[in-house]
Image (cartoon, rainbow, N blue to C red; front, side):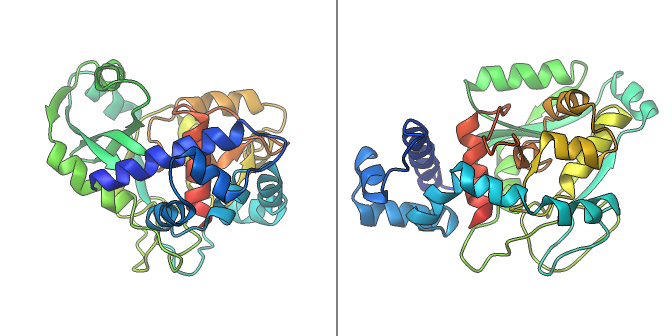
Length: 293
């Protein structure tokens, strides 16, 4: 991905920060453009290139009203997810994944080789890491590169890390395909081995999940949420048969280190507020707007 994409996300993040600074009245598109040092035509072009979305739609997707609209669709979504995600929407391609067994996790403690590298994405720079079995880490840069690498080493302390930025850059377009008004508005995720030839986001790579059985169960449920749909934390806990334990579910979500692909950004508060996010609330809102295009 090019430097122009990095510029687009910088403008998107600043626009979201500006809109959030005016919570009681949504600023007009030309006011947002002016705050960014752009004219309205330039701002429209940035959004069109970034996500195929208009300034009006973009601002609407940042608001609580939009979020509550999405949450209201959840009752019809829950049976689909409880059924194991077998229902797939038109134009969707499943995301394949596998979970490390306890024996594999113990073996990893004796050392594993991880390729890793930085890539530019629609949501800023990200550190990707992978083993021979699949992509196991995707973290967005909120601080400096050294902090990203330190976190990866902390998570995989005995791994041999092999830097390969070129491969990371080749993975990025498969994870974040170009957005346009004609791109599918839905996506799904299914366990390893299920293949579909149609196009979608969140596809084209195989994930390696490393976590407890409960964490993997939570992450699997998240990956079955169609793109553009939202759940509250309590709704997800209900889906998992744990309506009284949203904090346990929240702890599993917080342990996710595969940003966007395991879409914890799809979880918001019941009142429509975006809530917390490991890589920043503005990036979370950017993801929701990107997926709404």
